[in-house]
Amino acid sequence: MLRTDEILSTIEMLHAEHLDVRAVTLALNLDDCAAPSVDHLCRKLRSKIVSRASRLVEVCDRVGAKYGIPVINKRLAISPVCTLLAGHGHAAALHVAKTLDSAAAECRVDFVGGFSALVHKGITPADAVVMNSLPEVLSQTNQVCSSINVASRHAGINMDAIHQMGHVILRIAQATADRKGFGCAKLVVFANIPEDNPFMAGAYMGAGEPEAAVNIGVSGPGVIGSALKRRLGLEKNLTLGDLAEEIKITSFRVTRVGELIGREVAKELGVAFGIVDLSLAPTPTVGDSIGEILKTLGIAKIGAPGSTAAVAMLNDAVKKGGMFASSSVGGLSGAFIPVSEDAALAEAVSEGHLVLEKLEAMTSVCSVGLDMVAIPGDTPAETIAALIADEMAIGVINNKTTAVRVIPVPGANPGDRVDFGGLFGSTPVLDVRNPGASEAFVHFGGRIPAPLQSLGN
Image (tube, rainbow, N blue to C red; front, side, top):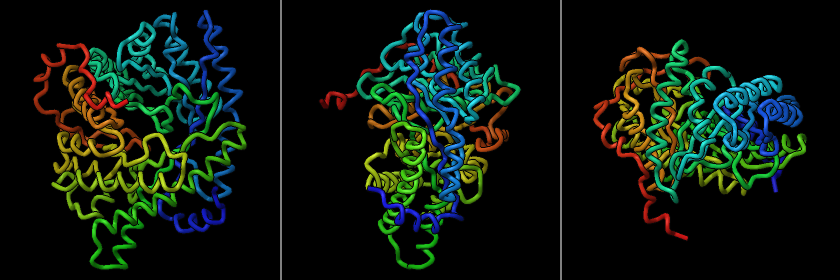
């Protein structure tokens, strides 16, 4: 049972340390909006979204103001749109996407996730419609986000889908070339996608969920960074075990705050409370950075030996603190390392300390994967597919969620600086070594079989 007085005493400690509820995400099952005509389908979509989500922003603002903890983003996550598009064609996909976009704008939410397909074992005609429509969808809408799951522990890795997504990502970049390929920032390619993730661009509502639910994404890199600096300022001869304990305790407090706010929002909206996702999602704001936490832990240059071990320790301590705080922890819950959104990580790339290969190694122990990574716009589709395949392999073999959100920047070369604005930040373009050298591997296609540990039932 949550004790409000206990949580309020914690809030006072955290006001100046970038604690926020990064996202309140209202998940909606829209499968009952299916219809034989696309016009009828879109009318039902708009009606259900507006009726369910019209009060979301108002309620989040009121609850956030009550506790002095801002809710930064209000979002929608829908059941995968591939189900709704079954039996419809390419033109219907864009019509549905624009309906989702306008309904989200009417409800004043920031993003709507769920323009998604699950193709880890095969691609249905409806999945193909979703994937092939993404260049038009993500270039002609503002709030719509997409996720494609191409691998899982039990199915293995669908290399045909990955190869196709390599080409799709390049087409999205070209379709949004006037925005430096920004459309790709609204697409995540996953292995082992979680069904209750409140963070964009990967949010969607999975099977087995209720009709509607509120999921909370709490982020606190600044809080944890400040707690570590306080502890180091007060005590000498601390070990990494002592610092891990401090991270765990702080994560516990942050999770309790998130659950309090989430349950109040859910109660006011009259829907189920889902999960708290305690993911340390950084922002470009100084002091709100995973990279700065790594420096506090003694990694003077991010990307140096020890960086992977430091991320592993951070990720593990965050998960342990969250799980102890709540029985409703879910989603991703750990440390994100999105390069452009973290000023310290972007600086490490600029200085040459953090290269793509080391970043990939760090993703083996963080919460997601290669996230918000800008690469040259002329990177071959097969090389992008091979990057995705490597990250999917890390997820499948280690039974964890991994993801790729890369942005091929048209006309950009390694070292060029690109600014995506706002929370998306800025970053140098990373060098992708040996482009084209993986072409034959990718062209074999087929499915890389699931590992032996998939037979654990």
